[in-house]
Image (cartoon, rainbow, N blue to C red; front, side, top):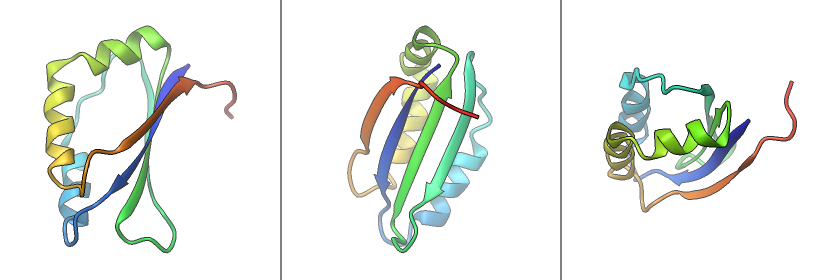
Length: 94
């Protein structure tokens, strides 16, 4: 598996709108294994996003999809700045 972990800092007052944006996105990209969104304990404006794909090829196919770019731009509009990302091979899970 291959995926990414992102750290997002939400604009003040925009958390509910951001969560609604994620909930409204009903796309299920080819190869997606899972999507998780964490609210960081004690940090009301910080989220961690984790996404897993079956392999690197389907991960980058999704990244190159124009609908993914549109969803990304809608998300970033509600953030204090672009997320930080860490991509990599998933070497363990349960």
